[in-house]
Length: 286
Image (cartoon, rainbow, N blue to C red; front, side, top):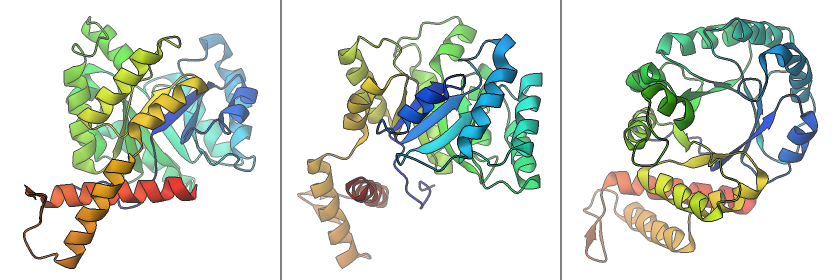
């Protein structure tokens, strides 16, 4: 299946702790495509209520900086998640999207969809694939709701559950299955953050590997990681030039056999080139 037709750049997602709304405000001006206020991993259990009370008003404020604003709630199988959903239902404004962690089944996603529909919230959904059960059910999870726009791969929790290393080779199957599920459903798919803030070379390598595997973006934990991520996931001048040739040739003869520079160009490539041009245009006009 094609990617969703409403192409949106989702190259980068920057996390900010819900207890620090000042960081959230700064993150919105960082250049990230998405900024996620985090109620889950970044918040100690004893401070969840405090974080929730501080986080939700941020979404009632006027949008700034051009980044999509997302809220990561707690695991849907926890009491804290129920509190999150009640608070959302009583809030003045809903986030543009909710990020659902540790999802293990499509039923969990459908449950959130139903709740959002009940309160008439136009909120999109992003799901993190970071458990063994979630990885097994990834294709079904990816098609569980029309609100879904992206999957994220979570290597830290998954590697801990597997008893495996977080190294690229050890997590290759998990990444590949997540990419496959996203591609089948037409969703964007973002890779796990690079956790070493001083390892710029490692970040660039990881971002490039993720892009080559089929990821459309990568999460970040600090604004200084964004340039390397954007470089890896933005169409290059060479890609844009090739994409224009492909699309122009196809549009001139959509029923013919498309061969450019001696290479057979099939329909999936044409669709990918259209997407690259759409993202390039959005970035130029952003």
